Structures are given as structure tokens and as C-alpha cells.
Image (cartoon, rainbow, N blue to C red):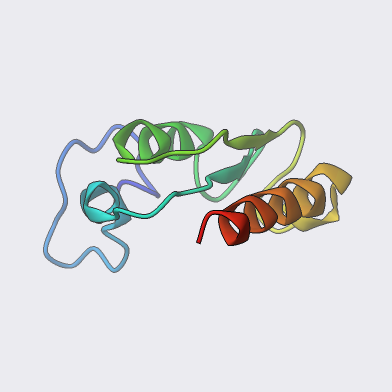
Length: 91
């Protein structure tokens, strides 16, 4: 519900994606990648997820990207490779 209606303040039992409630329980580093022009999931949801992470890393806000094209932007793959490489070194 929060994905479809960004002003929703609670999670309903029928919400298939309650990630906003679960993300604070993740103890590993978390990389949030979100398009600033996402027409399906409002950009504010990405910001909210980032704010609730226990161990967030520098996020990637892909300027101009929508919901289904974020991987077409060059910085997407670069940031993902950087994140994975950094985490592999720190295992």
C-alpha cells in the first residue's frame, strides 16, 4: 500500500511488500538504488528505506531514471560493482 500510496503511514495485512517494516532488521550493509522519476514506486519510498537501514552505504539516486530503466544508466552498474567489490574485501 505504501508503494502505491506514499502518504500511507501504516502497513496493512494484505500488503504484499512490507519492506519498509522489515528493512530495519537487516544487519548487513544495504545499497539502495532508486530512480528519481520512478512512476511506479515514488522516490520518497527509496528515501524512507534508506533512512530506516541499520547499515546503509552511499545510495545511488539515478537522476531521471524511472522504474523499469534504472539499469540502463551507466552509474547503475558502476555503483553495483563498487558495492560488491567493497563488501567482498570486507568479508
